[in-house]
Every structure is written in structure tokens, then in C-alpha cells.
Image 1: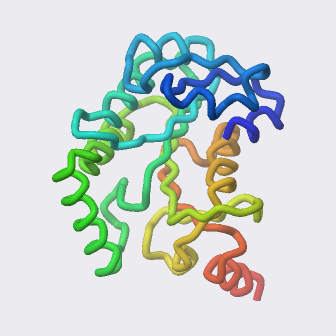
Image 2: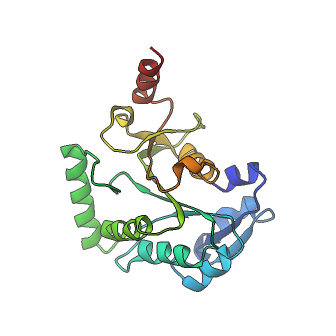
Length: 215
């Protein structure tokens, strides 16, 4: 996301855990880095106070409402009129109309149980975080990502309002393109108050949809 934002000439302020700052060494002379946890309200307040747009990855680390704390801090401290772009997985639903396969639901249930048992993560934390976002009157977008893979960019992912739509069947997006969609959403007013579920534009399901649409 940092590189995509810099490519567009944006001034970038990033919040990063102190133990991970070295991962941003390639950008340290081009961005402002504020060390700290993303659920630290003081840190978030300092980071977003002048920002016209905020990109937030909702990570449900631990069992202490990390995602919820992060989302609430952004909602509370971002300036009025700022575009707020959040990311999460397909398991989040905005209107309850998403359709999930049995395999997906089983894997989600198994991962959620084990993650909470080991106190590694809490998926319900993301559910609560996005519930608060959806109820907010800020200019939010919640980008729901498919499974991710590494590799060169294939272009801007395609999206649908509901998981289960045929265009999303491939369930795969390049990580770099997930970031691209997040940054592009900053200036796409059609995505305000939407929760787009995305998939790579070169995946079989996306290409099949494009072919059918052009027929």
C-alpha cells in the first residue's frame, strides 16, 4: 500500500509496531513513521489528524479486541470528510446476504476455534469492528479480501457486493493488487458505504464473467 500511495504522489504517514519498523526501511526517507500499536488511541490520533484518507488493516490479533480498538480509534480521530478504507476477509457480511460454501464455513469455524483457544486471534473481534464501521456516518469502505497469493500485479481486482456471486468463485487475489484496490478506493466515491468482496481480475471466474458480460 505504501508504494501504491507514493506512486500517486500522496504524503504518507504510517503506524507500525516498533518491532516491525525495519520492514519499512526502503521507505523511511519518503514517509513519516509513527511507532506504536494501531489500537493505541493516542498513536492513531497523532497519525490521522491531518489525513484526507486513512487505510486500515483490521487484524484480529490476540483476544483483547485489537481490531475493534483500531477501528474505533480511526472512526473517532479521523478528520471530518476523510475517506476511511478498512480491510478484512470475506467472512465479514454487511447485510447478511452473502452465501458461503460448507467448506468455507467449516474452515472458518475450525480456524476461529483454534485461534481463540491458542489466544492467537479472535475473528469475532473483526465482526464487532466492522459492525461499528457499518453503523458509522463517516465516509467508510470495507474491502473484503479473498485468499491471497504473492506475485506481480495483474491489475485492479474486480468486486461484488456479495460473496457467493459467480465472479468471485476463484477466491484468489494477488497481495499487491489487494493493496492497489485499497488505495484506489480512496478516490472512488462509488465505494462509499460499500463492502466490496474482491477477486483478482485475471482469475478464471473474473475472466469468465468479463467474457459473458461482453457477449
